[in-house]
Image (cartoon, rainbow, N blue to C red; front, side, top):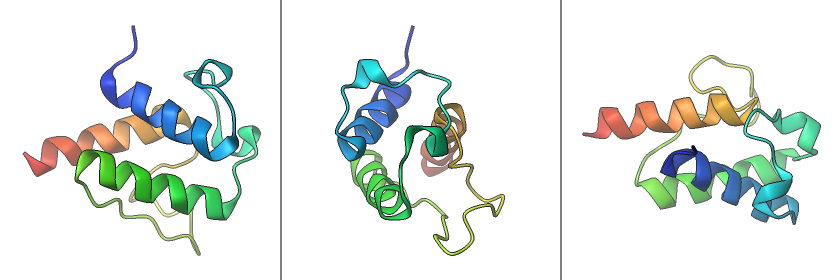
Length: 87
């Protein structure tokens, strides 16, 4: 069963990729989906707005360990952590 965060992540990625949410597997890797750097930034803005969080993501260095934007599970875990930290 999907959590609200997982559903939102998949919906936002799907919107950026012009896909339906059902076309994105819960364990999908972002690069395999074909999301470019602009799409990643737009998805981050959408997630920040949706959940009232600030995602520590540097588009110039996407592999920094502050936030794992490589896969759906990584994004979900990062967003859930930031929501919990926000209180």
